[in-house]
Length: 439
Image (cartoon, helix red, strand yellow):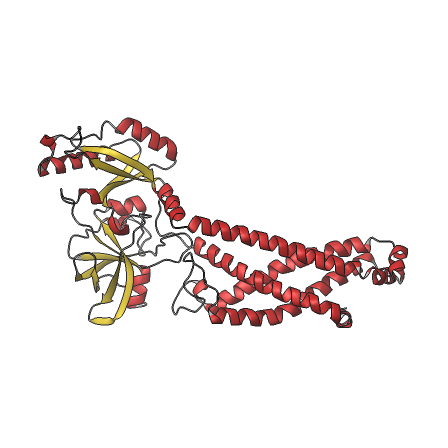
């Protein structure tokens, strides 16, 4: 049967040639869309590295002497620090709050703050091993309990939470930094040089955390965690209170209750409650501000639109192809060919024609991938090339190329199966006498 179908395709090569070219072009276009979708879904599937569910940020304001609510008796440095401590303790004592921490907000220290501070990290006595990583500032162990950054040792957040980063020049790094500097060796206890705000200094790696992502659709990046600047009357505006509440508390209800019950209580000296928002909302706001939300929505809509049009185009092509062969169908049925055999033949013929078109399409795709013509602008990945040692498929050229093309092939096979079956089914139901009139 296959041999007969090949002969049939060759006999109609003039007409099939146009379909061949159409399928080849369609495969290339759909591969570009599929590659984007594959990278996006792959990156989305990678764990974030921390957990912002049930977490909130409380920011405070400070009345100045230009306002009527300013109290000069509460403005000396001792009273300021006492009032700030009371402000934080009241939040910690609020109902359903599990952990709260006075956190340094500057330079992207907390998740989805919008800022980013990067530093170079080098091995001791090895200036050639350099890793660029995000810098995170931690004021207490509760920071890890709130956001649940986990250790690679036991996947717990209690392990890093128990480390005092203000003692023994301690620093925490993520697994990506560890691998790039030390490969398969453990970094714990080793000395690295980094600048986390006070110039380049030597630090001892106290623990290694699991990789983390800045956004859902990007790959994890390296990060280092060091002790934050100590709060003082001179840098009060650089801090806020991060907190985690018990699981299952509705976000809108918690914020409403907190504002209602704590606005007066948190008016302490010249301090007052300025704002409370969830980190989930901060994440969505930042995605929107940076254009990531619109980018993903636009590309997803375009992908669906193109696939729908491509599917309709393929259906129309094979429908017209079968309509022009009604005479052949009638003749075959008159000679005793069962309707199911005719349907199977037309479907097999369509799949074989498509498979033949895929061969040159793969060559075109390979050239496009190698030339670096595919670039995505929402930080899904850097380049379409192999990154040595990367654990992620999207950074291995061969695997990414094969998987994206296989996904494209299977997707189009399903479309072509339907596109060939529907007109073949309709044509096979025509009475042989009616079909023979076209012959």
